[in-house]
Length: 197
Image 1 (cartoon, rainbow, N blue to C red):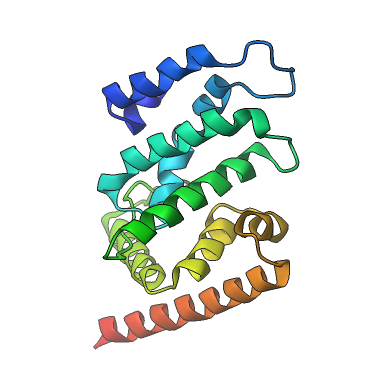
Image 2: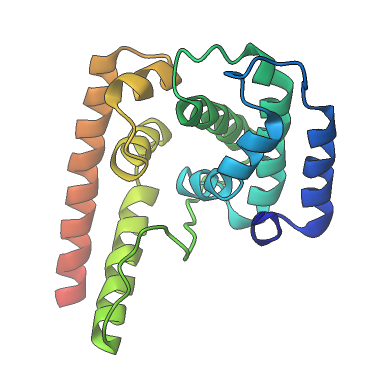
């Protein structure tokens, strides 16, 4: 299990200790906590980072997410995919965390998934510059637009799932996505002009 790469050993042990409390009599269709934890142990911290959670807060919020998952797993009805359900928990935990902090600064991880490996030093530099520009553009988005943008463009959830997660009409989610795309494009264009000067 790749737990040691995402959580400090003491926290990983605490989370895994709760696996012993899994509902052993649950129906086959009901996932166990151990299964959910193993499936999403690396995904949850990465999603929290993309949702704007500071790196220093990710381990604590990851533990909060899995605490909620453990507590609410019996209520999972399968109306949505397990990934969508876990995304919803991540969104609420991140949203609640943002309400508690004074400074809203988006800091992304250097370990974004599914990046093609650059061939040369120039390719690496260009990729790093493009990622930095995207991170800067996303940091300028309001939280609601950033959430829809990340869930649709990065996590590749359907708009129906996103609307369900955010508790808004699907058209509202589309409106937020279009506004986010427009704002990201504007910020990337503005940043590109600054680099040329």
